[in-house]
Image (tube, rainbow, N blue to C red; front, side):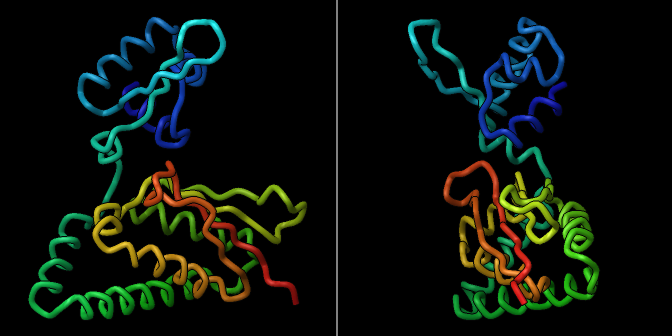
Length: 208
């Protein structure tokens, strides 16, 4: 149950106890007990929201400690390594290292995605990201009725601590998707670094 609540909040950003209870099909009393325990453990936190004249709502969300329950492969080790490179060789070498790493990764993605229809490529890309520790999903963009545009959403960041210290990696990630999908335009729609609860990218086939 604990993991289910944390995953729901990871995807939703914020939610009331009632919304969580309905989603998990548990009584309001039961969910409040779980939420109290999770808050005591420092995994979630709440804000009070007043709507109308009734009782105020508690909006629950993951704390930083709660987000860290989800995969962040190679995060701390890589951050330590980058800090060592910056201290010994200078920050410009860190930039070169990060750029080279993302270019290699983009080329690997491009090879694995191949030239399949966009929908199939997006499904493969999501699986690749999930294997790397991202809680990723993909769905068709709302404004289209064909398979020419998709949104890829990542509710956690496998390199969160690196992005905080070296935010340029987020720009490299955007470029990486563009290289992996050369016949598409890629636009960032949401960004965890900006305080949003997810990273999102809009991928559209370029008009011919």
